[in-house]
Structure formats: C-alpha cells, structure tokens
Image (tube, rainbow, N blue to C red; front, side, top):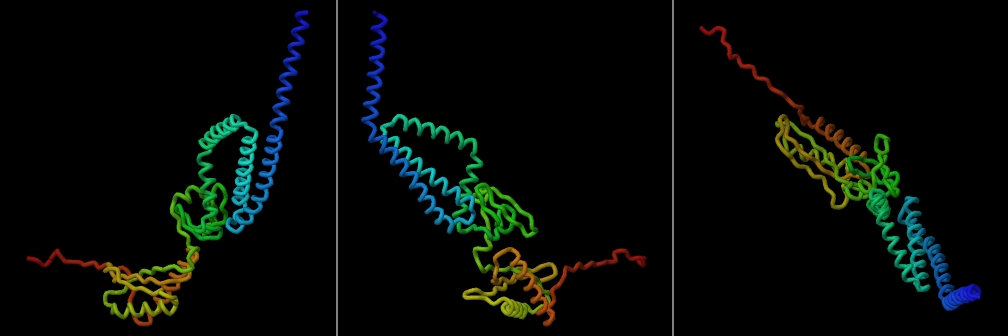
Length: 292
C-alpha cells in the first residue's frame, strides 16, 4: 500500500509539473510567435539590405572580395540584432546576458589569436573606401613603386615597371606614407644642369626658359622656374622646374629625357658649354739639376 501511494504521488507530481510547463507555454506562446516573426523579419531585412548596400558598394569598391565581405558582415550584424531582440521578447534576459558574455570572451580570444590578420583585414576595408588609392593607380610606398593591380582583405598587389609583382600587407599601407602619381594629372619636373664659368648667365637663363616653354606649354598659373644653385668644381649649376602631364613615374623620366635633349640642342646652337669635370695637374720642378 505504501508503494502504491508513492507511485500515485509521483505521477501526480509529474502531471502537475507538465501542467505548469503547459501553462507557461500557453502564456508565453504569443511572445514566442512574436519572437519568431521578428527574427524572420530581420532575416528578410538583412537580405534586402545586403542587396541595397551591394549596389552602393559596387560604385565605391572595385575589389569584389572586399565588397562581398562587407555585405556579409552587414547582413550578419542585422541578423544578430534580430536574434537579440527575439531573446528579449521571450524574457530570456539571463540567456541573453550569457550569450553576450560568451561572445565577448570568444571575440577577445579570436582577436588575440588573429591580431595581425584582423589588422590587415580592417586595413583592407579602410583602403577599399580610400579615394586616394584605387586599382590602376601608380604609387610609391614602402620602398616600392608600381601600378596597383589588386586590393583584397589581406594585402595590395603592385606591379612594378620591371613586370614583377610586390605583395604588401594592408597594415603597412595604412601606417606608412605613400605617394600616388595618378591622383594628380600634372606634376612638376626637375632638371639639373651646369654651364661653364665663361658663360653669359643671363643669356643661359633666358635661353633655357624659352626652350622649356616651347616644348612644355604651361597651363593656368603654372610657370617655368630657373634658379642657379651654386658654384661647382667645373660649372655653375642650376635647376629648372616646369609642369607636365604625369600619371606615373615613367612620365617623369620621359619629360626629363625630352627636356635634356632640347636644352642640349639649344646650347649647341648658341655655343653654350656644358663642361665635364676637369682636373688640372701642376708639375713644379723642385729639383734643380743645374744648381751649383
């Protein structure tokens, strides 16, 4: 009899527990359905937001890998927001707190383990929105010069003038200065030269300025500048500065090449001497053989 009574009490306790669970489920059923609807709605919002931002990013980011990664990150953030809101509707505050704490710990561990990789990744996202650096630009950075052929989430790839490729981590580009020739259509060219000490300096200045102006038309406020810089061992040295169309390093070399040829032609026609280094050796007869 005692055993039968214990079984009945156990069954009664189970039914009461199940009844309590059923009552709780019925009471929370509206919130549960609302949480599901909210979460599904955020999934659809993330999908359409991803398409919208993909169109926007397509105009700003030329590199497909960075654009797709940015869209995926955005969609994941929207879905996570919907997940947390759904948990809040279910009154699972403790679960939400535990999830956030766990996510923080996991995120910290991953961040420490992938510190260098994440640095390059975030630097790649920054570079993708940086108007001063685009695919096809000719840049000088970290001791290398070339055309940018690729920008991804880890590095940029530069094709040098010798047809070799250089891979540079994104963090190096963000932290170090770089020079972009393509961002400006015109740049100033410097040509250094020297003339003999017997030259008419005023005539040389006038001749050089006329030669450069005839071969390199200046625009707007641009002008050709000529300045003597010092007395050399065999010549009086000067620098002439002028503007030309430059979008890469080769354009500078081409402009200097043309300027040197034209200046040499003009000097030859007017008899202006461009001296080469001269060494004078003075022999003194300190030994007099005829001395008594």
